[in-house]
Length: 283
Ligand SMILES: Nc1ncnc2c1ncn2[C@@H]1O[C@H](COP(=O)(O)OP(=O)(O)OP(=O)(O)O)[C@@H](O)[C@H]1O
Ligand SMILES: CC(C)(CO)[C@@H](O)C(=O)[O-]
Ligand code: BAL
Image (cartoon, rainbow, N blue to C red; front, top):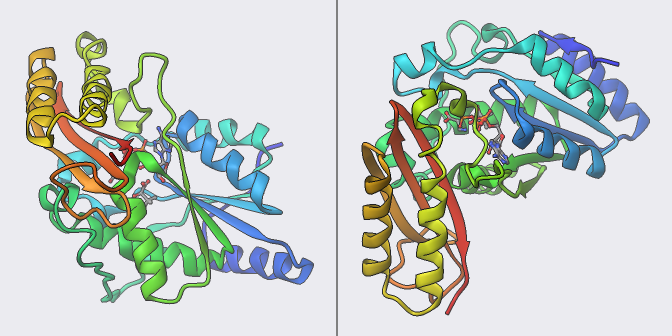
């Protein structure tokens, strides 16, 4: 059976109050819709960890630095609800824009440090938009736990930081990246890839895997990353926005994987910006 779709904060609060009275543990899975198996893996993990699960669908205008990107972001609400039905999700919150940003809205949540560099450097204002809407969704849902994908690793770190800094009583759970059989990380934006470049897209993940192998075998970061960058461009990507080795704990820049590390990349293919990242073991 399809979960009820809630469009107002009042409806969400009423349901939340009933669940609180039952003593239910409530999970939230924030999304922007156009759901794929990556999102569904978060919903399944949430269902396993909580009594009640709310999936939110809100294409948040404040996190789009590029108006064209916002305009073409895929919107597939009816199909999203169908995909969630077999998972036993308890509610889908699809707020009208004024339920998140009421007239006169004047507050922004800005997380420094971890939101600088990487996507933060290339998408000005993006993480302020993410931090603001995630803070609102956590407070509106009053969730006990919230599920985010490691595919957006920097976003996950920004959310962990803001929850600690603002004393929001919620457990943040990071979930592994779900991939296509050829390695491409699932992403709503994959649907925008022109057909003729789809077979090129997995080169991004392959380059990360090869760089990880080299780093873990003792190759210096400079050489390993230069080889990976060249491989991504040779495969047919138009631009590598960033390709960096960072400490997994706080995303501080690293010269070598001497602590648990993350290798993160953003690159452009067929007019679409793809991101990916993988774990690199400490030497
Ligand atoms: N392949 C994936 N595996 C696991 N989680 C994912 C995957 N893709 C997205 N998520 C997670 O789903 C949540 C909602 O993400 P979002 O709706 O932006 O989807 P997306 O596919 O990342 O879309 P976009 O094209 O905007 O990057 C985020 O926590 C994100 O990290
Ligand atoms: C966390 C999020 C739902 C906030 O809009 C979005 O950034 C996303 O889908 O990753
Ligand atoms: N998945 C992160 C949301 C965004 O790209 O805006």
